[in-house]
Amino acid sequence: MNATLNVRNPRFTKLDSTTAVTNGKGRFDTGELTPQTTEKAILYLGFDWGTNKSCLKAGYAGKPELAIEEIVPTIVGYAKEGIVDGLLPDNATVLYGQKALQHRLHLNLVQPMVDGVVKDLPAARDFARHLRSLIATPTGTEIRAVIGVPANADAPARENVRQCVAGLFDRVLLVPEPFLAALGFRDETRLSDTSYVDPVRNSLFVDIGGGTTDVCLIQGYYPTADDQVSLAFAGDRVDGLFYDAVRKTYPDCELSPIKVRELKEQFSFVGKPSGPIVATVMVNGKARKLDITEQLGVACGELLNVIFNTVKELISRASSDSVGELLQNIVLTGGGSRIRGLDVELQRLLSEEGYEQPCVRLAGDRYKEFVALGALKAARQARENQWQQVIK
Ligand SMILES: Nc1ncnc2c1ncn2[C@@H]1O[C@H](COP(=O)(O)OP(=O)(O)OP(=O)(O)O)[C@@H](O)[C@H]1O
Ligand SMILES: [Mg+2]
Image 1: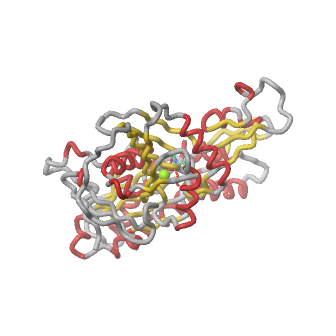
Image 2: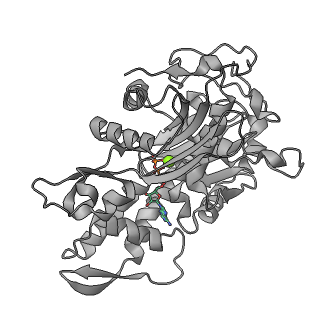
Image 3: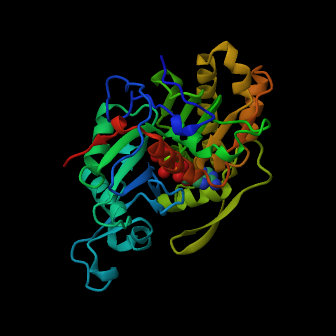
């Protein structure tokens, strides 16, 4: 039986443990919440460790306000061999996030996360240490972090995350990202408003990131493995398809991965384009205009197809009693949800497929914060026995 989540009073949420690091095999007991009695200051941390960008939200126990808010590109840059003194700030040997991107010419850039999971353990650990350094706390503060993981992260993937943060945070809890996104998106101040559609009650969340697209049924309890699907097809794959198509049409145009992503983000669309998309790019030092309408449309369209098929699969797994309301509450979030027309086109495809009045909406501009915000809420709600200590 699923541990139920009291949707009216989030303080009494009971998280299932199937993917939490505290207990990878079974569920936690469902005893009552015990009040915090410890004297030590506790900092609760919500940590969205994204493939492209990571987000931190933290607050102290007993204080509702946020103490820390950070969004950092998930990238580590190691200084190239033999680099001249004074080129990098403070002659740093490693730079992170925005600074690493800024100085990329003189760095070997390493992406610690690929497809939503740790790919390069040493770089991931360095990156986690950097994030820890951004969190200034009084001595003796205990840091309890809820960390988002892709919906289907397996035991080795979760273990890697634990290893990376061992010694940096005192206790951790790993929770699937789409569930955290729904929790973060939820507006608790409106729960008594009868017109408010509570995303945690009965919804389908589609989180389209850089590495993975996570689709998850959120039905008032902690999702089980059957309620969620994580696909390694998201923004990075769209970049790859787009790049291949551009190279096919314009073989002499070499575009860097950063330029490819930039063009995609600027012009992305699904459905009918509003007009031809002509981008100006530098080729061998000369500005050149390229028509990229078809190449970008096909690459983004592939992602739409993948999402459509996965959403249908998840709808088929929902109980017949819940499906009517569920169809009214399909929420797109993550950076990929910024693709122009994605909500309208997905809704159109679902309607054409015969689903009853589907309603697809966007989580909105603050998409990057929802997982971390939900993780912070989950951290504040977690019971003492749900936390796991991670020792180096
Ligand atoms: N306007 C846009 N159009 C298309 N794609 C976009 C747009 N804005 C951002 N993206 C894409 O969204 C992706 C990043 O999304 P997000 O920040 O949610 O990912 P992440 O959380 O780092 O990754 P993951 O959840 O897979 O670990 C990138 O591929 C980025 O290019
Ligand atoms: Mg993400």
